[in-house]
Image (tube, rainbow, N blue to C red; front, side, top):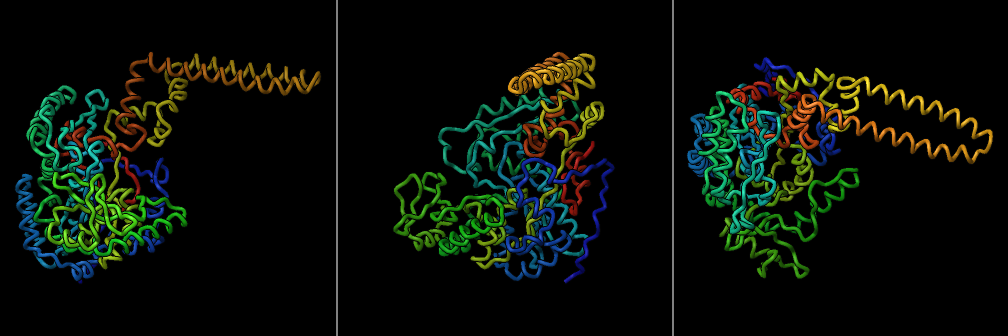
Length: 559
């Protein structure tokens, strides 16, 4: 085994950073926060937890020892897929490297979202690429692999993309769903003819930069009508990472399913053990004060079944022990499902609890980069690894950024705001903005009025208390109502002032649309092309150079 010390990340980025602890960001799960702060403290849920990313390399012997897939067959499929996706030369060098018995894979993946979906898809890919580079710098053979989750069926979730327009507003683009595609995996759904016009419209929303025309032309070529969403997504990923050697895999490939058939068979054969362990694990998590990410019921089955028309349907166990394909009359015994999985693996796709095991059966996976929800999944599906006697893969949180361009940095500075001030929402900022920067004179009138009213009510309270205590109690109730009405009027005043001041209103709305859209982190909704339209391919390079694998917080990246 080679030396395991990974050189510290030496970022070439000249950009300015600030770090925000995830504990200070709303809506983070307790399990995720605990894992980020001290993963070793949760070893019973994460048996392969490590204290630092540099320790991942220690898993190489275990991973290689458990790996049995035919690398030559795998690499042949990957070569064909990535040629279809328009991959660059470095990708094929990495596929060749993966063919060697001493090479491991750094995995990540995401649903096949429109225009690659939210920014966190990009951060996942770059995290895996950076880790593979770290391994290579230490003389260890590793390649980055991106699993395109084309088997998923949540069309509504993947069909939207939000791009920031030249005025700072969010522009929504949406794929229509052909009626005949109902129930199909998203990767097999064709792009509607009408979408070509929507892409043309994109040009009018983007800032007039030297990169705009090439961007629109590229999207028109990739997301062309008739092409499937899965293929377009994979092509788009390879366009963005052409020079980074990323290997993209589409799991809907029939030949790939033949390679993973043994793990399908094992999962079908031992499904009752798997479900029992998952139900127990959910109870264990709840007893420790955590909320299980996925609801597992006793009738659960770890694989989905594809009917003759290609529709993906769940399997549910009946009281007689057989399994029913939902919304059909099809029923199978466990042995029949195992036999089908062996002979017709294209009939099946793994559920969320089995998918990581399938990925790590197909690839010699030494670690996986995921988001907070995936980290929570792994607390449950580590039991699936145990039942199927597979090495439990180490999961690491992907890098996390909010990109703040010069315009929004100036707005924050102008109004004396910190990024965390946005968490309370647009309305919460109005009082300080109006009272300090928009109309301080009128704001003082409200303050003076409240003060004077309180003074006079205090005098009246003293007098009423002397005359009759019940009158004083009645005054207390009415005081609250009086002050409530003054406060409500003050709030309306703030809203009117902001609406009337077009510059301030536009600046603040643009700030929220970019940095805290819809009350969540930028990376969870804003699409990467919002920034490539402004900065071209350099944006991807800047993010890559800014990655620090040892950083466990959320970083503000100032362009």
